[in-house]
Image (spheres, rainbow, N blue to C red):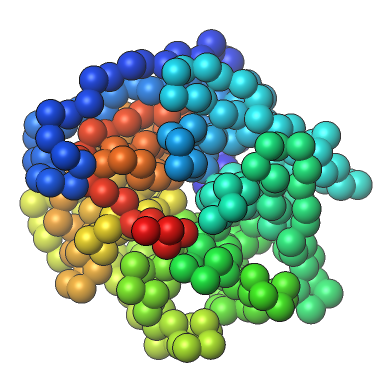
Length: 325
């Protein structure tokens, strides 16, 4: 999600934290025993965390909007690329939002500012526009992205939609045919997006309706049988706060649980997809949690209100959406 702010630009802060004394994924730690730890700061609007196989962290809008920053495992911070220089477009200003890394180490970028789906080379020196329109109609504000195990890219375009004006859409970019297919339309700010580990379903945050939707995926990677997975205004489990809380970015763990960054109440909700209920809730580190990503048992969370990335040492393995193992 993009929210207009004029934050001060803090210097990058990297916090070195000792590893937990158990193997990642062995035992999940209970929410009450965990507190988010500040990992890095200095982001004009923190969004789209993605980590490569070496543990380098990529976050959009490092120091200023339009850039993508890279935080190395040793704490070294740099501007990985500036989308405004790498792939300018007349009349609009490129600005990344959601990020993922494909099997070749390239960044898949939701360019919200210019309404495009981009792919940035692993060295950050080149970028290509994968899609900027469907059937001749330009995308408005591509928000977030995810990949399936075949490398196909799913992405959302909220198009400035609201509950009163639900005109957002979701799309799939076919990696083999290089074609774009619309999967659904008429949505009230479609936002975070993720394919289930079994590749049978697609989950989407419908932010302006305070809920997550789930679709069946056909063998042809089309969507069917849309239904509501969870409505945070009336969540199935009542021992967590419920209300008009807006879901944003999301990611799956290896066990198929869905982790949803909540924009309005600053938590990570963990959803049991089979039952459509909240099974855990973690403090994200501040209000306006925008997205999250796993690496080696830890969950990295972008928090816009703090211009920062926080880390939860969950001891939980994330789902490898590149399918390398």
